[in-house]
Image (cartoon, rainbow, N blue to C red):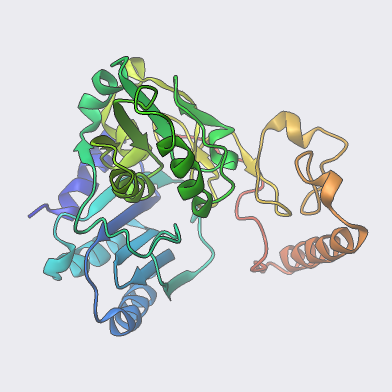
Length: 333
């Protein structure tokens, strides 16, 4: 059984223990018949330890990202490890100079990653895991189609070199794209598929789907891009750009440091510094991506929200709708 605390401390050692908050992305497809009871236990444990983030529970497993100071994260990892159902859980660690979440939420869902195909059960059948150290060799094979299973707001800021972008707006769109690929004549269908996502969960579910469409050789990056960043030296990387993450950091670079992007609080798109210099950018109201579609009513509502955020800040409070990261803090090497 893996020692989750030891895995975390290996990351800390690489950062010379210069870490304020540990961020843990975790998931496992496993039968959880007691998800409602487990939700209450997890919420209480996280609140007691001072952990923030989001965890999703469903009958098919667990998925989430949490952040805490080192001692609090140790407590949570120790507690999770007492449940044998979480043995071998996928865990990716990174660091943040600030708490990237506002609160802790443990939620019950029908799926821990929503694809809308309830018959797909990765716990029973899925593609072949590929370790990060072996990923470069696989995707260099000319017979391999490399597929990014993430969404357009994620692929916009970084992808593996040569990857196919399905141009999905959410993961529910992926099955339609996959069905079209499967319709190609046998002579034109790719011989091998290699799939990846941020932390490994979407591509794992996607490989299970592709197998139902008759693709025999289907591979996925174990631990996703975050694990690749953790284990593959930057000078050997085939990744271009930064990787979107679902917390206040917005993105991380190959060294798992907070990236250069901000976030539009109107449409949730990642924003470059150039985007924020646009005439279409108004903090909390609009950006170049969404300004054409923002109605006057929505703009007024967003402007009022931003006003309340400013007033809360003047009182020394944090408004729950505020952006925990207006500007990227200083990064540690």
